Image (cartoon, helix red, strand yellow):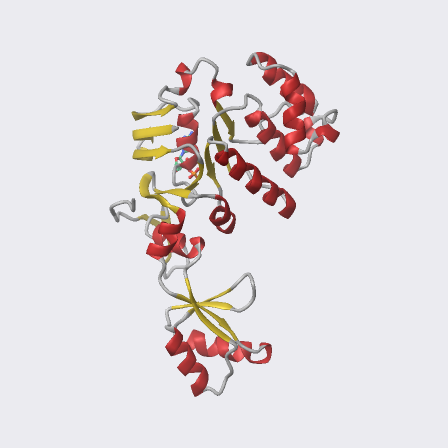
Length: 322
Ligand code: ADP
């Protein structure tokens, strides 16, 4: 369990994390979302004792990280997969970590197997691809068989198979009763992996909620539309002209926002176009998240008449969704 209470971090005059309170519970995967610069990495570093809070506190299993008797056995983390001595082999890197944390050497082979790196155990870390480096970072996080895992962008650099692998791994770790806390900018992946969400913007809590509740209660009516391929482009022009938001759906067809199914149907009839499917659906996590964080993106670029771009901080404050 991870508990943050009024957690705050200021760098000079800038507040990176602002009175953040949340609990990350065991037995489920908790996703940590926020635009770039929202304070996610700073929060994770404070949980891991790498940054000192300016105010408030954060504990792991009830203790500050630096009070944990055997940190690697309680919390495994992956913050930056490149933070490895490149001259060491994969096995040497893990053996070094095991020794300095009084973990039996045999555990190294277990985690190598678990992350699929057994065959490259003798390779130097600097020779690993980005995806393999990421697997090595995950192996290190698993080394102490910890009850709490904190992973910053763990799917970075992984291919489709690797992404599916990590999704299954995290889901099974949570099903074992572990606490899994991860950040990712890949919304579709987060939607598939996380059960619970903590969303922050400009260092503040925007939502702390069940994934399904978050999507269903913030969904703003999207319609899945399929037309014959030959008429798709014409339909698109009419939808744009009617002010609809149109995105491609991953399984084919369009996700249309801003118009009701009736309005879309009438639009097609007016222009003599056929419709093969017209289905109301929930927004995706990405759509809900984009709506919610639009107001809290750290700085919004504003084009000026001189062609330069000015940046202004927004000052909107809202109650978090719980
Ligand atoms: P995220 O991980 O959500 O992208 P960060 O936690 O990296 O956000 O950053 C939050 C804010 O704190 C940003 O404005 C960033 O520029 C600032 N920040 C982060 N680390 C430092 C640092 N060491 N010194 C000064 N400012 C920092």
